[in-house]
Amino acid sequence: KPRVFSAMQPTSDSLQLGNYLGALVHWVKLQDTHDAIYGVVDLHALTVAPDPAVLRARTRRTAAQFLAGGVDPTRSIVFCQSHVPEHAELAWLLSTFTGFGEAGRMTQFKDKSAKVGESGTNVGLFTYPVLMAADILLYDTNVVPVGEDQRQHLELSRDLAQRLNARFGEGTVVVPEPHIVKETAKIYDLQEPTKKMSKSAVSPKGTIEVLDDPKKVAKNIRSAVTDTGDVIAFDREAKPGVSNLLTIYSAIDGRSVDQLVAEYEGKMYGHLKSDLADVVVEFLTPFHDAAMEWIESPDRLDSVLEDGAARATAIARPTLERLYDKVGLLAPM
Ligand code: TYM
Image (cartoon, rainbow, N blue to C red; front, side, top):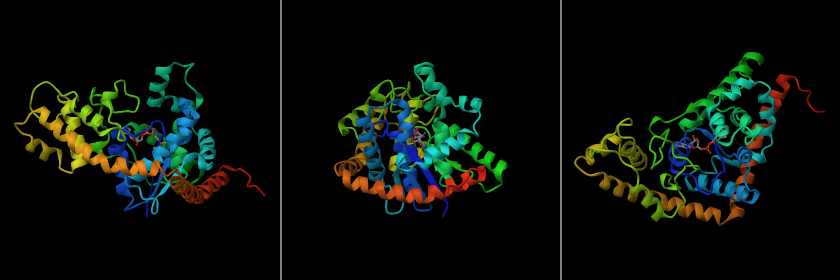
């Protein structure tokens, strides 16, 4: 079976709807056809200086949400990045193949460091995409399901893989393919529908936190910014707000955007928002309950992560040793 790898950072108590629809939904589907590995990338989260106790809690909560969303730990590997030290080891190796300028061109780094200023940023934020490449290459990954915002990072992973293959021979590492599903690749903020929905949005009303109180979720949807005019149509340029709502609706409900547009012909924006609020709340309720069950049984959760770490290590260790050998590191006696 081809292998799929993906991961999320434990940087919030709840995933937002973009993480869910842009990534998690596709992770769950790919389990049927792929050998799947899904990580909580706690080492990546260290780049934003989290409070230690909060980081620990969020690491468990993030794993709980993978499971609640349908990742099946009996088939797929669910693990915590820091439990498999090979990630950090391969990141070092890959950093010696990454150009300084190449890393500096990563737009997420440029955006984040511009926000905090040069003195506020850290080297980890700069090398972040190299650690991400290590995550992927360590498992000879074929497919990486992510949202649009990770496209450039994935391109770096591919460049690094191709560079290693050119230097040490074809087949040294697998060159990963992005799996970015067009319809849900970018879910937008409800208040500023030209910006992506994110955990760090300016207005909390623009984000749907999937573990939030259903009343608040519904309220945020009902107060979503729509566009001038009164026709419900899909047009990203002219009607970003309505288009985003239609995208979310279609992703959850299964009907196509065209079908929804036909169905809402002659109806008002308010109708669409109120129906969508119901649909989202209904969708999130069982997820919420399942996530809470996992969060309230940390021992059960930890044993999933322990099992995941062992299975991940069994794949990661031989890959790292193979690459250490290729680059000329002396094997330990
Ligand atoms: P993270 O934790 O920021 O986001 C997790 C996943 O959610 C997707 N996503 C979105 N998709 C659609 N619309 C949105 N508004 C939206 N916001 C977030 C992201 O694209 C991502 O797929 N660097 C990664 C974590 C990572 C990783 C990896 C991913 C580390 N190593 C290896 C894949 C493979 C990140 O910060 O994702």
